[in-house]
Image 1 (cartoon, helix red, strand yellow):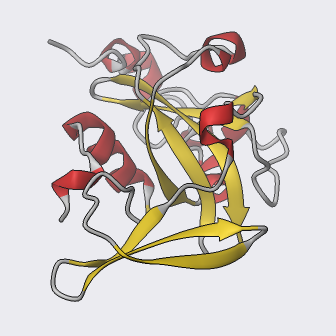
Image 2: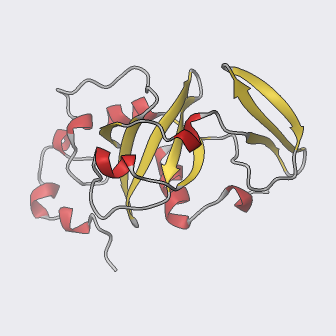
Length: 184
């Protein structure tokens, strides 16, 4: 089966000036054009999408942390085309959160801003994450009023991992069906 974005990679697009093509060859949308302002910080509710071999994936910013990036939740459903704000607002299943530099990815045209949505109540609070590894052990933590709260050692494989990912890793995680319990 051909990836959904494959039909966009025709001769006309390959010969467009570089400023009109996205990093993987699909036309850039408003978020990557020079005439659109990219925010210096990603506000909660910023919804974005990016194309993968499995279709269009969606992310929503829930928290922004200087030096780490934005905490984004990635939606479970994939889309055959760029989703609308209304479609994103109705998503009920979310995979996992990761830290991701949304503003840098917008600036570079690696993701496309869809709009602003109300953060779903089930992902609005800062999640319980785990940090560490198999050798030193896993420790659970969360944040309360922006202050990290250590919850202690954990054996819960389903807890999301405190990690910063780039666009390539984010796409790999989505396409492969990665889950936090894959890394224990």
